[in-house]
Image 1 (cartoon, rainbow, N blue to C red):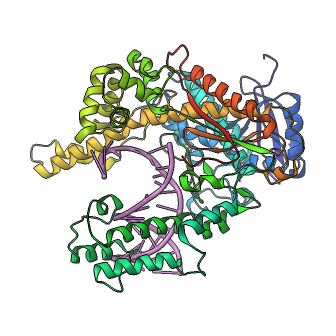
Image 2 (image 1 turned 120 degrees about the vertical axis):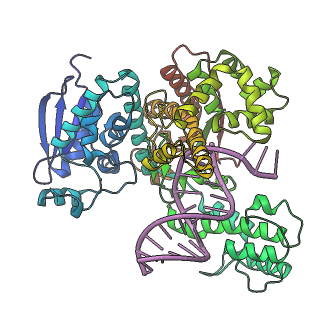
Image 3 (image 1 turned 90 degrees about the vertical axis):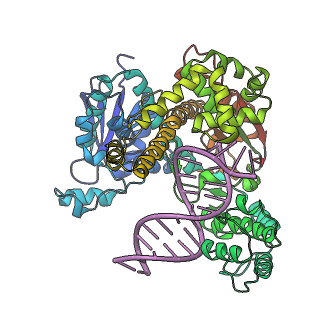
Length: 581
DNA sequence: GACTGCGGCGCG
DNA sequence: AAAGCGCGCCGCAGTC
């Protein structure tokens, strides 16, 4: 451990197309440096990784790792400077975030485009060259990376609870590796099954630009029932006016409101909307755009949500409708191992707050069933509604009543989220278990709160300010739980990724060739959705993959909440197809 | 024509 | 029956 080099930094050389591979010691001092021509990068990284797995430090995972994966090279660990910068520069646990916040070129949250040359006063020919060389929005050169790494390590070392922040940096970076690998491998997607579902739901594929015949028929039925032969159903304002003319008293055209009314136009309209949604979001155009050679390769955006959840960009990977799940289908000779965590967020809350009653309610069983058995509420549905209200800040109706009942039974857990809400309402910042902090309020928000407290403030301004304070309170209330759940899930997939990569080579398989050189021979992650994972596995390896998923969940629980009584049970299934739940 | 905001609805 | 959090995507409508 002492002699092992903890860091190996990868960045561009100061000039030219070469890369620098710099070995650092534990104090972040340079030990050796190797200059590598672009064509030799994959080989050099593979050699370094084989000699002694290290934590690769690089500017931005996709900028470096996509090419390595394409060349068949996988790494065990990394430190993603861009993602970690965003966390540390905003974390309330960092004592002096000044140096990080001053390093503006690293402040690129996912999806934020880098400023163009015009916005960079110091732009030189060199800057333009490096910007053109890669699409990364952050500096690519080794010197900048080394300086940023030193700032980050210093910030962590001087922070409140540095161990937690180290864990978070590692988990976030591991997530970046998972995202790149899942995109490289692709989700096994059965385009024929997808087409079959579309035809079954919508009828035959129409010519380009036209609606399926059944949708056209439904539209005519709606127009007839509303007495408006040319009504454009896709325009909510026009549709709303037509509904009013037909004396259907709705405030919006949402399906929830429509379905509460009796009128001949309602049923065909609801069916039209449902079909329209499927057609526009995941119809044939989607299939043409996103599925190639039996693989769906979405763009995952690690850290894309303020809470630390992932987002996605293009293709809607995080919103695949359940009715389309059967199109997720293992290759011949392979199986899909799916797992989701039961009631992840409530369990995370129980662990964070060390609420003994809540931990007991969930121990070894469905948490909601446990709440019913404790006599707190009558039905599982009530337990669920109450718990969601607790996590999201529900106040009205049944939700409000049930939340008050949970507050009596689970004082520690409810105290934690109530406190988070109170901090948010005051304009404060809250943090997750590992130290990701909520963004500060907008200056306009603070100003509105201040003005509402002046004696001359109007009643309307006071009411507006109270409402926006409560809105922010619901956000921070949920932030601590959603964000910590995201940390648990990152730890889960980080551990799972490593243990799957250590499974034995299951042999060549032509069918899995679209997965690429790194993934065609053993079980690998192909999808991750907040609290669910999907592993594509050679059939003979599926049980081992399932065991790895369970072990990884246990280790995530131990890592975040050592000694906690809270468990994180999984719903796990092995099948050829992903089931529509 | 490009952009922005919004309604609506899919996911957790 | 829909509520309370976080997202992305589509189409429409208003703006420049």
